[in-house]
Each structure stands twice: as C-alpha cells, then as structure tokens.
Image (cartoon, rainbow, N blue to C red):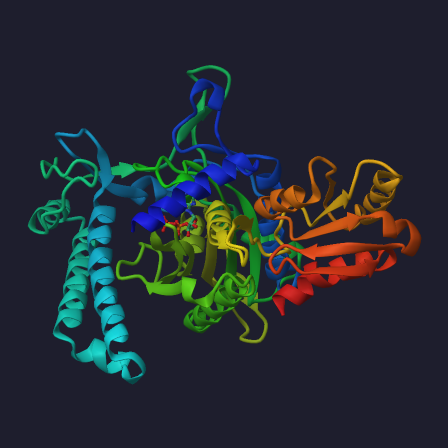
Length: 511
Ligand code: ATP
C-alpha cells in the first residue's frame, strides 16, 4: 500500500515537472479538484481523444460524430432524471468536519475484504508453488470464502438500501461495520443526506428575466436530443451510433485523487441505437469491443477487470464498469450501460415530439433502445500516465526514470539531437525536423551531453531519439534510439519517415 501511495505521489510530481498537469490558477494557490493540462498534457490528452475517435467513428461505418453544446434547455435535465435523481449520498464526520460519499466509504470497506482474500491467495500460491490450484483454493479455503461472502453481503445490502432510498440504513450499515473517518479514525457520523451534483448557472442579462440553466453533467443528453436530426440527415439505419467528446461538470462531494475525480472533466461517449429486444446482445458486444480497445495500448491485461453493477441506475437494465488498476487500486475507468428506451421516451414525453425510427425491415416504428459506452478522458489519461511511469534499474546499477507511454499516444514522437552544437550538425538536425514535422510532433534539443538528453526525453515520454553526429555528414545516416529498449540503430535519413510511421501507425496499434 505504502509503495502504491509512493508511486502515486511520483505520478503527480512527475506530471507537473514535465509539463503534463498543473493545478488550476496555481498563482492564487489553486482551486480544489480543478487542473490544467500543460504543453505535454494537452498533446497526450488530444492523442487519447483521437485514438478513441478514430476507433469509434472512423472505423465504424455506422457510427458518426456530434459536437453538442454544454448549455442545454433546462427541461432536458428534468426529462433525463438528473434534477430528480442525480444525487450522491453524503455523510459528514462531526469531529473532523470532513465530508464523504457514504457509498464510497462502504465500497472501500468491501475492497479491503477483497484485498484480504487476494493476500490469502498470494500466500498460498507461494507456499504450494507449482502444485497450487487457485480455483480449488478459492472455492474451499474458509478464510477466502468468509471474506468474499462478507464483501458480497455488504455490497448487496448497500445496493438495496440505496435503491429503496433508505438512507437511515446506509448510515446503520456504516456504523455496524465500524467504518471510521479514513483521515482521523473518528466514528462520529451525521445522518446520510442526498446531494445533487449539477452546477446551476444563469442565462440572460437581468436577474428577473434570466433562465436557470445547468452545466451538463454528462455529454449523453446532447446525443439523445439530436437523435432524429442525425438519423434523418445522415440517413442512418438502426443499429447505429453517435459519438461525442466534450466537457462535463459535476459538483462532486469528494474530489480527491488528482485527475481521477474532478469537478470539470471531459467525457468520450457513444450512444448506440438498437432494436428493442436486441440491447443485451449489443451490450455484450460493446463490453468486449471496448476492452479490446484498452488492451490494444499494451498497458497489461492484468490491469483491467469488469465490474457488473449491483445497483442499476434508474435508466439501465444492465451495466458494467471496466475497472483499471490505478495507483490507489482498481477503480472505474469506463462504463458500459444498457440504457433501454428510457432517455428517448422521456424526451418524447417532455418535448411532445416523436423520437422514433421507422424500421423498413420490420415495417414498424419504435423508440430505439440504447447501449452506451462512456469513458472519462482525464481518467484514461491517469491510467495511461501512471502505468507508464517507471523507475528502472539498469545493468550498471544506476536507475533511470522512464515514461513508457504507448508511442501512438506520446506527445512528442521523436527528439532530434545534434551530438554537438557546431560543425554543421545543428543545421542537419533542423533539416530533419523540417522534413518530419509534416507527419509527426518532433522537437529539437542541443543542450547538455547527449546521455543527459536521452534521460530527459525518457522521462518526458518521447519514444525515439534521433542523433546526428559527424559521420552523418558523410553517410547521411543517423542513430535512432528506442526509449524502452535503449537499443540504438544506424538508419538512413531518407528512411526516417517510414520507420516512424511503422511504429506510430494507428493500424499497427489497433490491429
Ligand atoms: P463514479 O462512480 O466514479 O462517480 P460514475 O459511475 O458516476 O463514476 P458515469 O456517470 O458512468 O460515472 O460517467 C462515465 C465516465 O465518466 C466514468 O467512467 C469516468 O471515467 C468519467 N467520470 C465520471 N465522473 C468523473 C469525474 N468527476 N472526474 C473525472 N471523470 C469522471
């Protein structure tokens, strides 16, 4: 655990030191849970967004994009259920005056039980070595069974009470489990209350005539209200999808853990419209397709797992999260939800307009069912960044800090380094840049010894360094160094574009 915390601290300071993430308005001491992306962060974020967009929109004939506004007619949020039900259960500690999400306190308790079971399994694995049969062990070992059973009971009871809006029972559960304030250990809790997460604002010049608006808490509703516009003008046939990326805002009760939970964040969502009755088939399809997308980045299969929801949101008939092994444990990275016809029907009712599709094959009109994939861009950023940051022991006993970002996502693809600042080497390096910059984001670096420059680029996440030396003047070749293997190869300048394309090609990564 301490090791994880330590890694998380390194992630935060490294993100700042290398121009990835700064606290918002830092000169005024920052704003809680709001962050700015720096020169490298903006590139990495854009590359993740592009990777998502290409795989969802460009690679699917039946998925198109949309860019809806953040402001929407206020009735949208009545129809969607957000005014009524977009609440989190909050609880305050009377001694520390700290505020928590009651469900998160309980989930963290359950996760500890899970970790205890995992520890027992790891211990047994060590003890039995080759002969260890994990499946038999987890189904027979009394301790593992007890931990898992308790975990399930706790989560089920919480789901039941939240579903029934029985907040008194949520508090009772916290007390029965002896859950204490994680910061101070105090168990002196207030009652649990509901708290609406939408930010309100006003549109209009004078106070009397201004309309109350909300900043959108999800991008999905912009897609639903445009469903017919896109379907008609794009001549889309069911099944088809609409994808969108953009900012969303939630007044989170507890916004900690760096960019994992922010009050202003970006979502990448796709709503897939299907025939009623076919939604669960598509739900399975999208679960699998989205996991494949994650795995394509090579961050390690063991770092992902599905979590099927016990408590379904008011609009869903099936829901699962793809969880990622963040520096603070497995947490939700993406949600895949079968949203039924809830949203379109609700917008029909509130607007009085039909939102239906005429299916020529079935010769009937219906309100389509929807399967949604929804991922936080900032969370994806954190997943990629934290998993890529390594302190590596080298053969000579020294260590190097290396940010092994997937090359396709790296902000800068190559650094061009003249061995020394004279003898015409900088001029050749600049010529190479002039050639490569049409296709790739590349930088020039001539300061310090070349070894130090390599280390600097390793830490910044640049996958390739291209060094120009005196031989280059004779043979038109340069040294290309791979960030991860540190291997160096002599290649022709004229081949650089092809070589980089091979390493950074979308096709190569997605296939
Ligand atoms: P959580 O349970 O963590 O609050 P959620 O279930 O409310 O998340 P969804 O409403 O399903 O999240 O939103 C879809 C995705 O948007 C999430 O999987 C997550 O990646 C991202 N997301 C949601 N809230 C935030 C936030 N406050 N900061 C950053 N990303 C967020």
